[in-house]
Length: 607
Image (cartoon, rainbow, N blue to C red):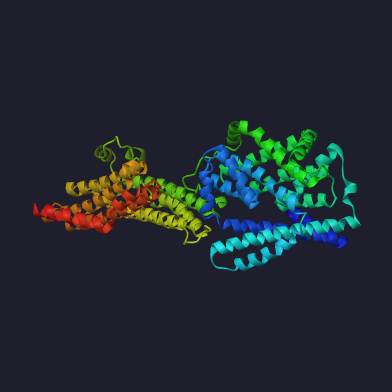
């Protein structure tokens, strides 16, 4: 209901303001231009989030103080705590950083956003900034129409900066003219009531514009023209700080529990900081006066004093909250408990991570591992072997296969529909929507992950085709055909166990060479099985019909083996960043493996 009436109410108020006051029209236009500049600036910086920003973020979060530093520096450079918050939520949702590190970044972003107030207060009203805006807009617009993504990104950044400066100039001119027709300063509310009232105004303005920067600029321009008092400007700054959490809250709506926890941490931090600033407003003003005098700010320079106040109460908030960060994490985990993950539904393909290449890639990788776990389930069921025992290296496979005969009590199609098809479709749909080009490094990883998902589906379909004869011949009175189907079960079971060991392999285990061993094993098994089938036909141990079925099923097993080894190589070797160049150079390709197997077979025939 609130959302339905909010926009019409804003439009009515704006229309009324335009009708009664041309000066209000100029101020509103300045705010609109400023917000458009913020959007352009964010779009520009988003073009550089294809690895660079994400890489810096990951390297800057192994220590809490590094995370705070990253939040300060990145927000100071991009002048957008909103973009930093949304990227942090997406990284947290994808599992690339922990909740504590994410909270540190948010703390730093709150302090970093105060640099905007310093820049505007120090320079925005001492020079005609629109003179700098025009060249930025011209060069920025020219670069936006270029094809290279980097030039387009620079263009958006320049155009965004130009619109920011132009918006500030419009707001400044509007308030200067407004003073000649209506002096808002006469409506200033003194005392604690004014502090609370203007704090609420700051919250409301930031929620509506979804930019604390815009609220601060509006506050500074109004203060510079004398339209609001210094005390009321301080209250507006406090309210803007609280209101800025709306962006993180909106960004967390499509995130998982970790993203929602971070948004709540952001809200708690800003509420505590705002409450402290309100309760201790008078002592803080005295400290601001002392700091201003110490760094050479004039006693009546309320613009810079506002910037000092904005930085001071954010810094105090960080110092107050830091000792309690572990308790805050535990509280958040209690307030927003983790849901029991579904085996059928996607766990990591979140809207909050789709816009950023690194987080999108990590989300697909984790979801592909989820699909792998489900694929292990269905293939183990197809073999009629308990998954837990199948993956336990301490249980001999011969005993396991002997203890679990093949029955026909498994609805393969239903299991596939529930655990594989929907998840696979979600992965493919997510990849098609992920916002990065195929020329980027991350797209190569996505390409292999998509192939791995397809390979799992191919292996499962081959397992399905194997079911009919597996059931039929596992109960055949012919001992030889019965044994051969037990051999097929053993081969697939051994592969699943080997792939699980590959998943747990460390770089010292040289996983790439383990993959070579699996590839050679499948080639050797296929060759030997075909030779055994020829021998059984010649000795009339099996009928030609049995032999035909066995050869077809051997092909299915061979397909299962090849596809699952491909999956293992993609998920457990290609993703291993520690894989050495020497190990890569030793890894054999398919032609070399085939040649080695043919050489081994010729030597056996000669001997």
